[in-house]
Amino acid sequence: MSKEIRVKILTGVFISLVMSVCFSGVFTFLRFGWSAEWLKMWAMGFSMGWPIAFISVAIIGEPLNRLARKLVG
Image (cartoon, rainbow, N blue to C red; front, side, top):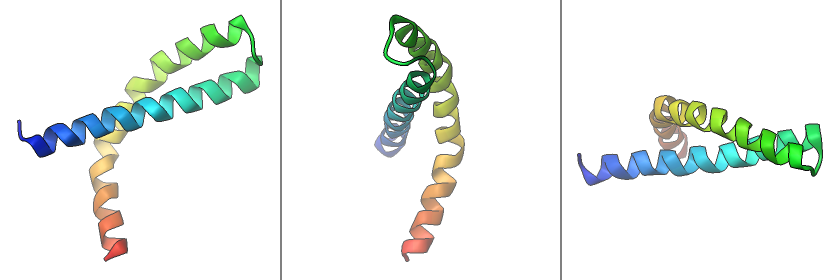
């Protein structure tokens, strides 16, 4: 596997990780407030959301990268 492919995969892991942590945390906080229940539900939401986010990034990341390159010129 080339270095460029490994960089793209790792970038996808990082992007999906950060987005999943942020979104699952914010939306479960809005639902449950700052509580032990929030922490439990955040963990559950994150564990379900990260794989979905990673697959989404893997599928749509490259086409969006090409679109951004076209728009920038």
